[in-house]
Image 1 (cartoon, helix red, strand yellow):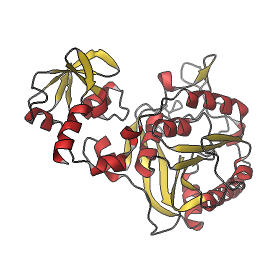
Image 2 (image 1 turned 90 degrees about the vertical axis):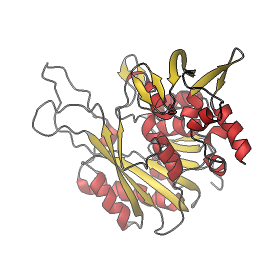
Image 3 (image 1 turned 90 degrees about the horizontal axis):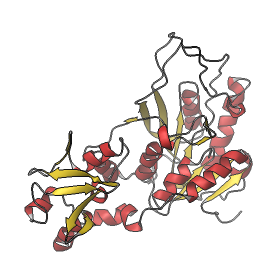
Length: 357
């Protein structure tokens, strides 16, 4: 294979498919490999209902040595296809992440960060014999120590209400409407929330970059990549997962290029929301309407914050709360009324930016 087939899910074993991809060809790898949970018995709640734990065959290994061998093979294959400027994210729990991290270093990867995903709604420890496992760990590593790599620091800071984003990410598990189900049963036992992949891809890729996921599962990586204007390559051996992932990704509406091209946005003059009040483009007391539900109304305060029922904060913070904690760009989330039309407030920011340019 001499060229990359963008936005494709390859069926089959990840090692066999990775061997066919050209070397130095992908910008980012996101890997959610088997965790080797080593479950030896069924789990039951106090009310005697059975816990739907991870019991899939793909998570079972005969020994640590077998798991380490598998890990070394797929990490080596990812190292080959990554560009010299590329980086890799891998997620795991205490069952496997330390073994994965050691093998990463042995293969020449240079660890940039470990990120702790703090779950707001973790599964309890029903037997009461250990602490509740309330987090997972992501390792972010570059292919070559000292090489140039992508990190969109300003984008992550903006996503975090203009505070530098830390390495502890508090996000909910994949539940509710986001959790894919067929006939009431979970499609995939370890489906990751899109908010998690949103941060990963926004932080370490640019529009048009190629993201490889060698354990594609239900397609979360592909769905977020399509939303953010990135290309994806997925590898998955389960035909049911592939079919569901294809349908899921096809239903995603990509964001407009202007909304995801952060390099272009950084060239534009920075405009705080309060500048719209100072310029008289909006007024204290004026109402804004939430783009997803115009019956949700916020009042503009004199200090540039919004008040929406019990919520008070920046345009980004209030929008994030209304999205149940998912990342939100407030400039695209609020509408104002002019001459009977509803317009996004970003059009007002563009007026000020054009005047400063």
